[in-house]
Length: 148
Image (cartoon, rainbow, N blue to C red; front, side, top):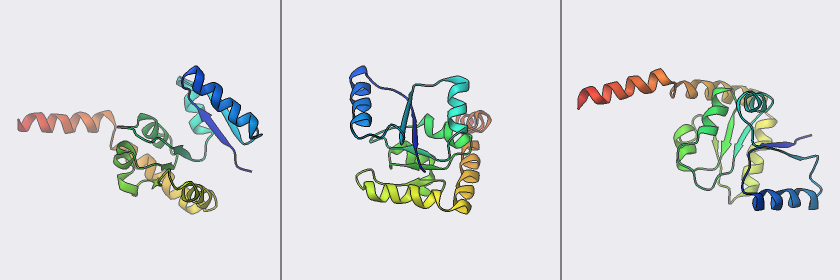
């Protein structure tokens, strides 16, 4: 009963290849690719989701992870620099190596099968996202600038 809904896009060539794989593997009912989203549509996408999954191989600060966390989504991500920072090395979400797809899949299944853990991570996501609120960031910058 699990399906993956994907928002986002890439180059025309990548999108065509991705669509072809979904069709060839007959995954149209399991993988729903909705393309890029913005504004209210993006917020609705997050709110309609249960878990946010990030499979980036490299990424600095990940705004999409922070957006998802601010809307209460638990996060399972590969340990990129940004994900490790935002998830507090695993304190605020789950880090899993992309090279170990079985482990990544197990973590998704475990989280979906454990409502208490899902709720705990939802609360932690919201709490952690507050660390990056504008007022908190400005206060930190003021503190840094005052020491210079």
